[in-house]
Image (tube, one colour):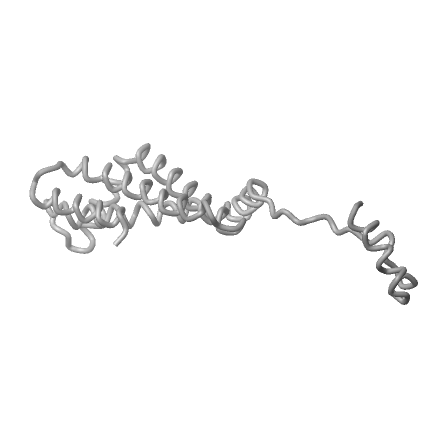
Length: 162
């Protein structure tokens, strides 16, 4: 289990036991989602370009979604109440409502980003470019030099010194 999942389980448990308020639980769920990005960042330290792009996408997605959720936390709470009423979750069942919030929060992040996927990919490609070595053509090793072993051996030191 990842630490973000453990945090969410502890938050649900504390909420169910009445040790934290529902509003605190919502904020902790957002924080757990943003906090999970550290795993991706640590994994990217030794990753290739694609791994670093993936980690950056994870961080950007979770941080932006977290900011949006904090800015619209009241609207999310109203949406949770609406969904809860439709699926039969009791008005005072804050643990299920918190789980519903977490789901809506992540779905909202996806919906907001879907139209921007191409731009997001281009941004990540600009941020993390693939390094390709410059192709160098031999100057002294050619067909004629390769036909005569002594000529090839004479050309080789000149080629590698350039």
